Length: 438
Image (cartoon, rainbow, N blue to C red; front, side, top):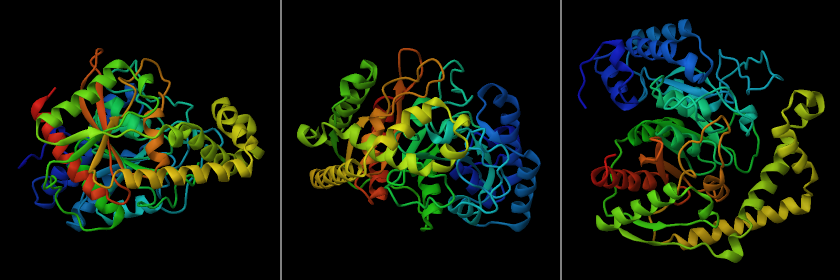
């Protein structure tokens, strides 16, 4: 897209890639883009409540400084939001908890520092559930304010979907990035475990916590990923061959809504009709029957220890959701049970690596269905397995459900082959959009 727009009212509708290009070529200013986003926040966020902290004066000051300094990095002049468990210098980190009413980190997290180095502007902190767990905050789905945006990266997905910011970072320990992205109808991405630094991010489970990215387009995901991995950014290219895709129905497949299951199966048929190599991949029951309990034991064991300070000093300020639902269970889990679960998880990872040797990506559910009514964040079942297995995942919007809310599909790739997943996803998205643009 070629743009000559400078009007702030239109700038927020640009993708991050388009905006960075327009600013670097002088067709748009960073200040105009920032003002456009801030205008949207001012008009909409009293309803959506996506932001935990935003300082408009500081955002404008940073944007003006970017304009004075000139082009710097692939994110030049683009605002980025950070989930409120990620430290960003100059902004408080609240974790959506009364335990930390005025905590101001003295330094950037690794990812906020990398965004600044890449020319981006830290726009503020967006809403999270309590400590990125299940207890919801006030954030609502911008597409229907009576529905949840999902969790725990609620504000990350909602702010991007509502065009209040082009890019946002969240985290995923179970389904905390892809489920909100699916519910809000945007692109969500969980990279391979370990690929993006977690320094300066509140840890819940060291074995699973993963930075997540959300944007309105796949090229924007590739752009932000390049900045966070400090690798050269190149335009996203579709795969050089029809993707080899395997439909994967996890053991809990029938727990999803029928419309969600039918949508994924329809995507498989569309891809096959378009010439892709499409088949099914069945997970062996003997190995994967207890995968959800394996994830729970590992995550809860680690959470119980990582929240030792909050439990010891501020037990009365923890919700029952996190204390009874996660911490107590983790305290009851023995070290032997934890180690056994870690070994089971590794066995599953080894099996999947072999099973996907001749496959480009798996196709599966991104969420049970449409975003449900109410503020409960939704079930992470259809994301947690892939978090457990350390593989990269993407959620792609694909049509709408009975209530008019977005439905999505999830693509799963090989660990540390994230570029290949992004390329396959570009081809898959083009096919799905061509066959079914709804």
